[in-house]
Image (cartoon, rainbow, N blue to C red):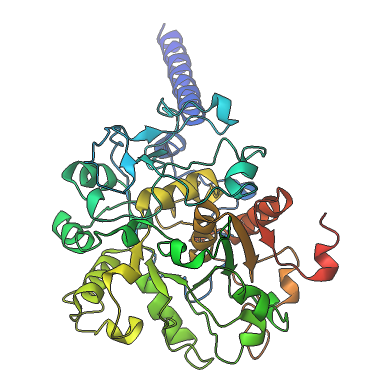
Length: 455
């Protein structure tokens, strides 16, 4: 009898363990949460095919690389509440509800009225919605072309590109505080946001192309050149062509002096985060980068990655030294000139950055422990912002499949191969540029021998 009892107990124990294992496997495969680490007795490692952190997904130049990788945090559930903003004369009219995205399908199936309940909360495919009217009636612009492409279901015209004074409310702060870094207001005090964004209170602050009426010269379409810093531009002789556009966008370590023949001389929009700006000034000083370009037409577009971006923005507008943080005591005029005004300063909306990540560049990095620091590169944000505001976009100096033939930057004196890091996914970005080019949504500059085979 004792032997039978022991045998029965052993069978029961094995059956229980088998049931528990099967249950764990089911939950891990069917719930949209991180893997259940304790089911296997140790932390489960992603398969090699997932390209996790052991094989960096992305390159980033020194100007985009964070000094330290912040620890991953588990974010609280997303709040799906809407926000009512007061109407303002001649400004976008916000809708009364924060709009949520449906599946990435053609527009007729994209109802945008239900929450993606199967996605983890840190994705946050829910955004503020505004009635944003186009600045032109371009007959053959991006807005009309995109409806005929596979991007129709992903492309949103109602997500605000820029944030400004009307966006700062306690309700929005509560909602966006669940997203860290460039994708929200996580870790940023409401007082800091209010003090900074309250000075961005004119039409120039919510329009990326605020002076279009002065530039149009009877043109029906807004033509924009977006200039990256890639080595493919060396000896390209594209300078005059770049400068012939209505607007010229640049970012980070954009060195112009001495390279005008290849990259042009004008800059209407300079995109950066405080971190990438400081790193660029350190890393590329010997190559000739002294800071952002200065000109009457130049606008400075902050990509808010940290609280320090809001602090530098406030200091620049008020013409006072930065009062706290890593840049404490620094005079913002050394970066933007003495005559910088609120009208020349802009800041991307975190909903827009998160929308770009979720809809256009949803990398496998989001399934790793580095999900909190992954974002589209500064150049990618700049190019996709142009895609959402210009009628015609030409991209120069962005990575192409033959990138190994060129140095990392057009101003490198010796060859430096492209580096890949986890906080961006440059391979995915490279594929995206090819797709947008083939769909006719952008015109991507490629080497003649390579580009001629892409049609």
